[in-house]
Image 1 (cartoon, rainbow, N blue to C red):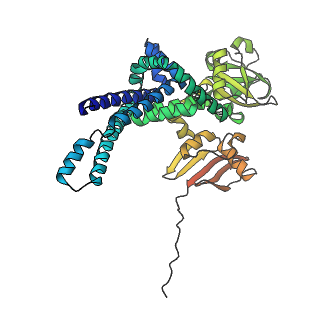
Image 2: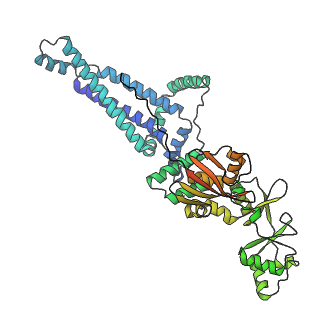
Length: 445
């Protein structure tokens, strides 16, 4: 067989090996989301690639059959392809070279064939397949499906043996395609780093998923901050509360906050005040009392949002297991949590940065917001409390007093203000002192 014929055969084998290499890498690297979008646009080949990704066993078996067969043929055809020509040159230059000349000629042929396959059948094709994964996968899927049918008997044998071994090792035969929150966060982070997703959009997407993890109590108005009317509320008291607390809605109770009756809109009361027709809430039916949405304190913010949508309401009272009112939440509270990092209102209200490594934090600040600002991954037993004040109580194992202090991670948490056993404010400082390891110096004797 002449040198030219061997060279043509080797080039064909390199092309064949390149085809199988690109087929293998492109299928593995193709993004399911992009393929699904291509399939939705009517690309039938993308549909076939998606099916192959669900069960790629036969596909990869054909790839390995092709790659190994090509490698064996390349070894046979390429064996000594350059030997006569290199040996002739060496014998002319080094007539007494003998066995050394033969060894150099053999290595030259080996490096020529192996280097050609490494460069043009592996490295370049696989890098191209990683860059243009979906395009190459959809282009090669039909010929690869033809080879799957062509080598069906061999595929059946090899794939069957592989399946048996995987079962013995108790390894799943198919990969898990379920997308987790971490996967989505990773994609969003990558988009933010690439500049595709803006910083505000990045925070907004993270906050959307946090609604599933945050309890309703993290965004509610607490019991002691609720402004409410009673049925026997005087006209002067109603006017004073509306003037001092210009809310759009007010809770109405029979006697105290735990005897919830309903709520009223300020727009229904204000006209009567202006006309001098309001003489209390005894005739409450004439003031259009609203049906109140009552929810348990065991719901997440996502579930609260669903309740608002079901009832077409934007105002709810939160009860604990003893049917006591623990707080109040509105649709605006949920939206504020969702948009917190975007509009920066939450941080301005509850967390004030005093310096480069110092923060003044309100005691009722949700622990999730503190984690974000301080860049703390997790607090100890954080499922047992909801606010930074709760964290202090958990760590101190007592009701916090002024000047009470604890250290966690690289931060110092100090209570600076307490009002009737309630932690109003904490001072958080980051400890920047680094411990230095001192190596003992031996004195020369």
